Length: 306
Image (cartoon, rainbow, N blue to C red; front, side, top):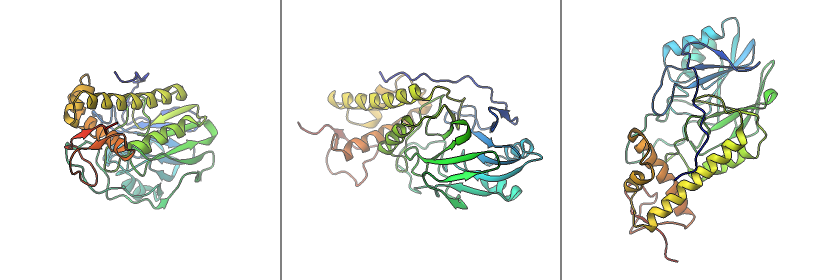
């Protein structure tokens, strides 16, 4: 069984209403609940007077209007994106049109390719390119707030977290969430990069994590350790499947994710593929027969001979 994560799921969505979390952070939940988005995408308003919006969310008119209402009498000066899935970045365009604020992000979506297999609800926003490209360590500031960029590829190749320096808070996007593990789906998702990014956060001293879905994580280090242990346990389950003669991803998912909602099995297959690609690249697993350049969902996987 995979390592048990101390999930935190209790949260009031309050769609359309900005909830103050701290002196410099407010949360407004978009009305896009679902199996991949939980109660909806959390858009964060940072600062007072002149503010930044992080992850404006899907292009839903009433959510954009709610962001404008929540900042009435203030000025939105920055629009920041943790990454470019369709539940995060599309509202940047209408928000920019209404406010004139520039958008900030690592870059456009990393892959326009589709992996063969079940589609996920959250696709890539291929129309978005940030006005300002940022990299790890860059600082973005306002009158009463400072955000430092923390590059965390894995969930997507362009995933960026933002550290609110004055409050030792980290806005984590989909990299770490309290309600669920993140999907790491090839071709843009990369499990080896994701694990490196988790360990990067574990080495930090953030006091609270503010994810893009679900409530805050108020005790980050044990939570991050559990996330890492969970992924390591998933890999051990994959190895056990291979030892027992289970060589295809679909069959592995039926065993490993037997207690998970079947609506999420497509996403689980993609995460399993991401694990296997990492294991293949490190020589700990191989593909039987003539594999494609990038192993896919339908390959036969096996342990190399000792």
